[in-house]
Length: 170
Ligand code: MG
Ligand code: FE
Image (cartoon, rainbow, N blue to C red; front, side, top):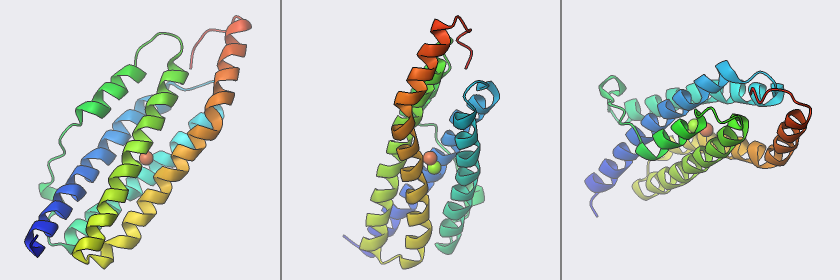
């Protein structure tokens, strides 16, 4: 494979990651407006929204280091993540649970994407990209681990609220 091929794979992957992060924002932002009764979830989502905005900046920096203008970026919607987001928006009362599952799926999608990008960075010798991509990966892993650590307890709280006759409002 030529250097040109590796570079092309890398730039495409970075653009896809940029689209993925904008998709992440569009999944998190509606949740920030709706979650009221799970303050720890709200705090973690707020923090990860800020992290995501930094991730987008890191990706744009890497793209400009490759002389790829990020103003020309056209973020394609990801159908997989779109449907996950839509699932989270259903009003079935157990929204907090469905959102948690969708968020967990999305974080793991992001983890795989950054592991792949780091591999391409290594193949192509794009050493300047390793630190920012590793930083993004670490934030996705921390978010996925947080959901993994809290999904059981969120479920218990949801069930307790329901038993107490509280509305299933998120
Ligand atoms: Mg992200
Ligand atoms: Fe994320």
